[in-house]
Length: 494
Image (tube, rainbow, N blue to C red; front, side, top):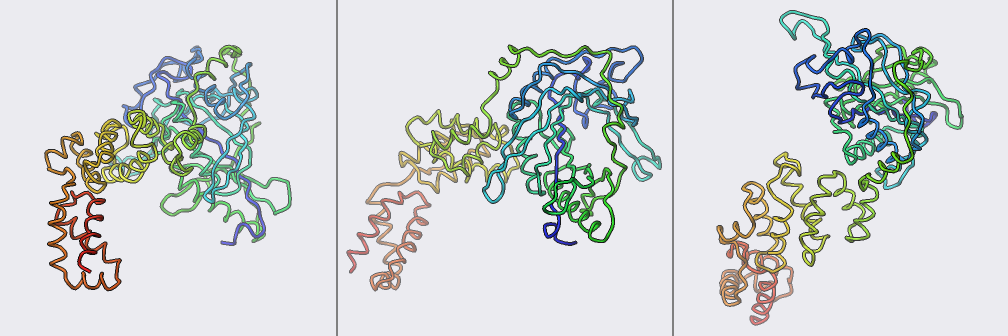
């Protein structure tokens, strides 16, 4: 493949589809169920199956969730909304049209700042946020899958589930930027409590529209849309591959075809699926069975007032109020549940330990245990109060840092409190100078050559002696006392 940046500039816009976590569907009272785990075609009714004569009714909660997202993405919420019919035939669309918004969406002209790997920030404009209904789900069979049968099964449980589409302007110029933007959108939706963010289950779907043009020109090239992206890595890799593929096509004298392409996760290549339609191909027209949706100033104000603190604001507050670095603040705010856990621990430690110490223990120790045991912050047995209690023992020098790490690991697996573990395992720190001095003298007597070398100028051997003393005392000695008494004992042997 030829270097994509030598002759051409990638132009990328993202369409993000996010199912809204309402109890019922967008236009009927059917329950929203897990489309992976639920029995097929059990959460359906004549409305979401498109039976003749059935009338849709707009889900108020879905509208509020859409308003949350539009406001969080700095969009202007439109007070006059109209739903339209988007006409196309596909087996997973029982009505042969989709109820969506076209000319009058709920949110317009927003923006989102993203952070890139080099530490820079870039603003991506959001063209529109609009509401629609999801389609059903197709399962393609082959002869090895179900007893020599082949064909396609359709499950309409997902048909009619509230779906939000977020369309960016073509401000993205690389796979890295596409991934950063999509991840930031997902984070915001999860903070707002409107979407679970699970790509593998399809409740959050990202589709990049990719084209390239000669550097220095302004006209857009032919675009392709990528489907079947079930991870952010696939988004970045698929986008990079498609940029390179289009570059090779143009450099070889060919023309890029406007089409929908799939991403093959194993082969790491894109492949053609079907030609890409234009807007006029869908024959949009206003939905005759739904009146225009009017959104009042008071409703917008109420939704805005109820918005939670969003990630960027939380990062700034953590730096200002807690003295955290930008990196630590971003790590702790990546997941809302982690941020809440951290803030609870801080609130339970009004004087000591300080927030920076708590943050370090979460990032460096608790996260390590969570990764090892494959548990989320919601599932662990260590509570914010438990961590605060553990760190208070360290502050009081009842145990040292190394012992505290062992205690935290025991808390993680057993759910016991730190004091109970320290008492049961006899882990209390030893500060008795007489006991420590006796161990120091035995250690120095056992290593006369090292003592001589230290006294001869190899002062770095102090670490060796500290290690020997701590090992004999099972790591329970107060390190500060050990270092002070050890220095005195060595000085006495000069």
